[in-house]
Image (cartoon, rainbow, N blue to C red; front, side):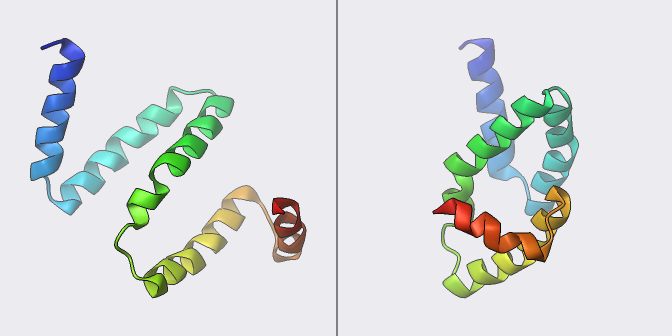
Amino acid sequence: MSTGGLKSFMARQYISAASPKDLQDMIDTFLPMVFESLSPRQRGKFLKTLLEKHLGTMLKGMKSSDRNELLYELVPLIMNEFGVSSAEIPAILENLN
């Protein structure tokens, strides 16, 4: 087994046995390290790819009402982080089409 294969195997073993809190702690520790190693442009591309590939998986099994509640919780957070005001939302939505 290659070094990369061994690391992947060990990570899968840990993840399959870890509690949700352990997983959150691991993400809280390692995700900042990943993003700090990337340039701003690379971080944007990484985040976009992450969401394109895995958002469906993250939402899998959630009821529509739970998805809607999550969306309503995330929109203000995203608006704040992107520096977007409520007045700008119609223009953003218009550009999506």
